[in-house]
Length: 223
Image (tube, rainbow, N blue to C red; front, side, top):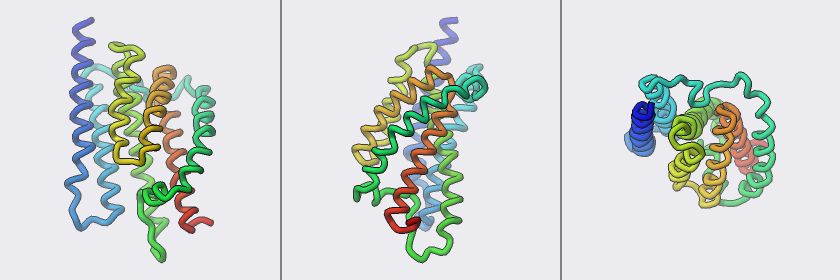
């Protein structure tokens, strides 16, 4: 039993290393002639492949099921209150941050120009990829790493998963990167407790939607 557990741990670590490498360097292969929408969809595609497709393939190899890395909702519906509380806490911080030049320069990720006729079409296409990207990120960091390593490392798996989660935020504003530490630990702890990633996915999408909404509002596209 111990040998099987160690082999499983090694496979998860190796798969995580390769996934993180490809998720970071995959964007380098985007053609220079690509539009911003195509570039973002490529970026999301690399995240979806690295953080979702690979883990789902790997767990089959090591004898786990999707439900073992948090892909289950049955019996978890009563956990919504934790995530609604986190969303409520995050709202004032996001509102304050949205008034900064650094925030408005970065968001929305899909650059919107005045007079752009297909603005809402582009946003709908982008948000399909964006949502799937959040499914992938939560599955990888809170499911594949936290829950996948929980039997071997217990609660320490939360800290193990938070380290690379912080590192993928190094290109973002300092305050957002700092929030990734807190978010990684809290979301990891909740996933460890609830054994599900779906409420975390909903929270991540909700915060991102609020950020885009506020950014578009400040730029005069909504109000």
